[in-house]
Amino acid sequence: MFPIIGDLIYHLFHIRIGFPIQTLGFFIALAFLFAYIVFTSEFKRYETIGKISAFKRKVIIGKPASATEMIINFLPGFLFGFKLFGAVFNYQVFAANPRAYILSLQGNLTAGVLIGGAFAFWIYRDRKKFALPKPQTTEYSVHPYQLMGLIVFSVGFFGFIGAKLFDIVEHFGRLRHDPLGTIFSANGFAYYGGLIFGALTYLYIGHRHNMKLAHLADIGSPGMMLAYGIGRIGCQLAGDGDWGKVNPHLKPGFLSWLPDWIWAFNYPHNAVNAGTLIPGCLGNYCNQLANPVYPTPFYEAALCIGMFLLMWVFRKRIVTPGFMFFLYLVLNGTERFLIEQIRINPVYHFLGLPFTQAGFIGFLMLMGGLTGFIALFIKRKSHHYKHLPV
Image (cartoon, rainbow, N blue to C red):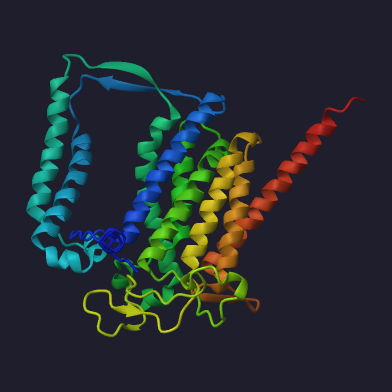
């Protein structure tokens, strides 16, 4: 496994990179990047075919920067300086566990204040340069794809909160024993928490700008599928603990052409240091699982990227509002419900039936998608009979 992206680069190209960028975080960033590209492309296509349209925005020009604007600019500058220079001056602490450092309260306060102040001063000087004796109100057009910067930031922020909250709920017993450690742990993020909070944020932003929810859901479906698949590549390469149950079965003969790790894998040098020590290994990541497990992140990555390609190829032939979104629900819900049968996750019981949180949400997505298809079919039939000649 390759907990740090430098490990992966060294494995592929024999080039050593010292700065510890975590592999999972790198692929999550890639997931956001490719989702941004896909979302932007679909926003432009939907505007071209007339399903969504540009809107007017009023702005006051020539006024000085407000205190709120200066604070908004100060905060990212403070965070950047606080963490970056904290990592530079405490490199050993940062290198030992980058994710734990980033999510901790450690950093360099002086650098944070100075760089945050520079960011605030920049907006102050920029506004002062174009100040007018009497500020004027002007109106300009905004195309939907130009909202993507706001969407990515907002979805990332609220998705992070949702992922953490869902993980806390899923491991409630751990919360009772160690509340602060659970809440501020560098580990523990539930994908569906991030998906639900992020999706609601995206829909809210689009709805505020007079876009129909059905179109917004259709636009976002291929991008969400691709982002999930790319994120799972990071899970597989890093060995982040999202693997499956122990696989006690021998690889079938008809799969002999596949590498053994696709059937069962023990995740050596995994990012969460799970399992037993690897003999002779020295360093931060020296554990591997005692028994090979199903490499479920690989299965999900392959399935979801394949399903994205399917959706992308047929997207222009799908014209019924809501159809693409219901297809996403059916495909992603089915995939996750089935994968949960061989994954490790806390198991709950209701009326004697075992289920996991993710498996239950996957089942609800599947049922929601099927219900949506039925509703579209009924609507189409009723529309057909309504226009039959009497």
